[in-house]
Length: 215
Length: 192
Length: 191
Image (cartoon, rainbow over all chains, first blue to last red; front, side, top):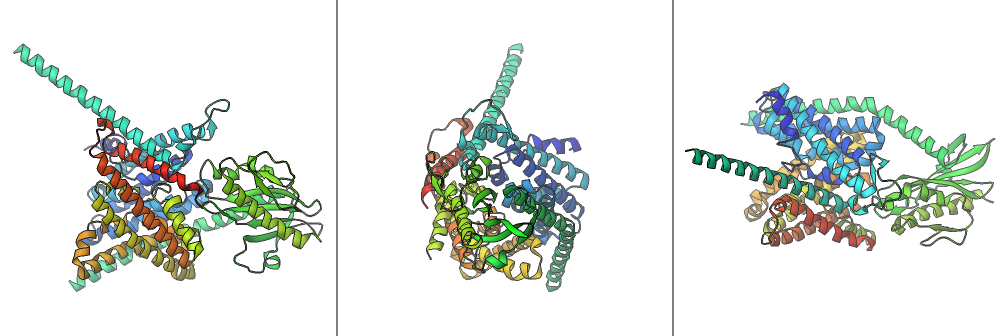
């Protein structure tokens, strides 16, 4: 597989959130505003990138039988670092993401990428994989939080979207809104997938018919 | 076998050791920044609740007798020309979802609330969360410290009444409780 | 005592760990297709979460704070949880094979359940005492179990229902969770 493909697969065909439905907790909890979504995505990408590089670099020296505990220690280290850096440089984001920053440790995507990719591949592909997955996850968070912020608070990245006092659907930034938004987005993606499959089937059918008639 | 598990244990120990060192290093760098931030934030917030305060001293030890149950956590006295001019309280009343941390400033000469500011809260987004917005905290500004403040759901008629945040009465009451505790302490200790 | 009851009831109904704090969503959506497995997961999580919270509380209070290394919190907690899960698994396997058969498959999943680490960290953030930590963790664990079992009950019925193709699976599960979450919002005025 080429490096470009390692990169794009995380964004589209294997998007961790929309396609593999991994890492659900933060995607529901902190997506009440686009700023939070971007912040979480960037923090997540940073940790994933660092842990993928470290694990890929050490893949030959980590004994197989204790690889999972080693991965957890490595991931937890980077999470602690990111946590402290965010506390120092982006204190507002740090407060609004709260407990979900340390919880990046138990985000199944990171351990999953370590186990499924970084320990089998070299550093360069692992970097591409981490960037692709990270950006894919960030985009997914931004999409969810954009829906929730615009509908629930009537703003986008803090700026008012609607003129005047258009009433906002408060429920969208309350907990149920997270479930509703993600559910609808997944349903929409399924629909698109179904339409695509149906089109392809139709195309195949018509090709087959043409072949039949030409015979 | 025994030798092997010893080796594995040692390996994990080394990784954990390196990890610990790495984290300690980042902590070294970020900790001063975080501390600095806490101090500037505190000073800025003090300025917000008591505009023009120049000399502020923490006199918590003098005024709070180590009572752990008290919701008052800090008493800072504002001095003007070496006489106390105002008091800034840090209070932590219990809200709907855990503690709310807020500052309440009082002016000794006018016996009025100068301003309040909510520092930390984890109330419901969109509802109780609004307590930190200025539209709500403004409602406390200039209230007399002599009477207990009361949260009301309709447009206030009395001077000691404060309009609640729509659909967040519990949070509003919690804020008022905090301000009242500070108010009581202020009247007992600073107004003779 | 009254305060502990308030914490427990608050954690179960008002601030339900899954439906309003979004901790432990992965097992909530993953292991809720059958009622029996939901009960197994619930019991396993209740057990591990409560013990882990108490141990991490002790670790924080007597090791991290004493040595002035609070910044190692995340890494220390996750290691405590991971080893605890391993330990519990070993003990159960030796002492009670029946229980192991029932809970065994759920135990490894718990290490990466963010509910366990999340509650442990929240207990520290809210500076709870030891007893309050016990109440809060037990309440949260019971809240998780309650939500999981209710949800599994609904999903078993959904299996029979005629659902549009695009909504099948995850989307309808999420929307069902949303409705449950709205229902739990109704407990808001309880305390």
